[in-house]
Figure (cartoon, rainbow, N blue to C red):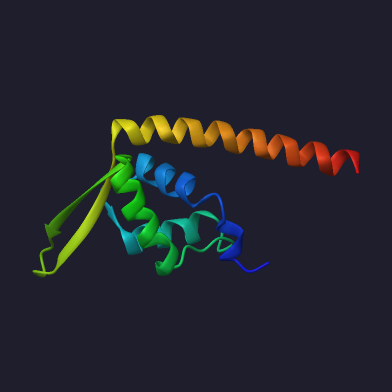
Length: 109
């Protein structure tokens, strides 16, 4: 399984969790945080991350805004909303159920 494939079904959870701990990140910083925090096991590619960020913004889970950095370059940064916090709680709960179910299968087969 490739590192990118291992994110299937968990990208929203990872992005929401990262933004809950580190608000105001831009897309590349989110990709880097996923890679670094997972010990280089998980990777979010641009082709997956940016559509997911757009979808989460449309759902109201995150808010995007443009900032201008000291070097004059503009950057789009993301913050978690109250709805995003609620969604994060639901995603974490669902993830714990999946982990528990997989563990049961691994222990009984």
